[in-house]
Amino acid sequence: MAATILSAPAPSSQQASHNALISAAETNQLSTDSGRLYGLLISTDAASGITVTIYDHATANTNPIWSEAAGASAFVVRDFDMPTQNGLRVVTSGLSGTVRVCVLYRP
Image (cartoon, rainbow, N blue to C red; front, side):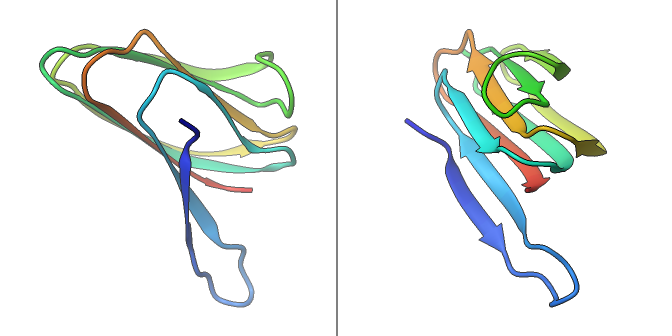
């Protein structure tokens, strides 16, 4: 299942920010251009774990900029405010049970 993208309106002088909600082991291409990665939230239940890898690339799993493994019963919050040059690609793997990943970004 592809990520659910939620957009937040922004003042006319700024671009809107987006939240991608991911709950399956998959690859999501969130952006194919430069932008900004603001943050990452990971929530897992007692039976789950997950690995989230974020790439600064428009078409492939190359140029990794962050990787995080979260175990069972985890709640992880990461604040980045990091520019991306080539796009934003998020790969989630190794999960079972209920997992929620929220990626905050601006394309």
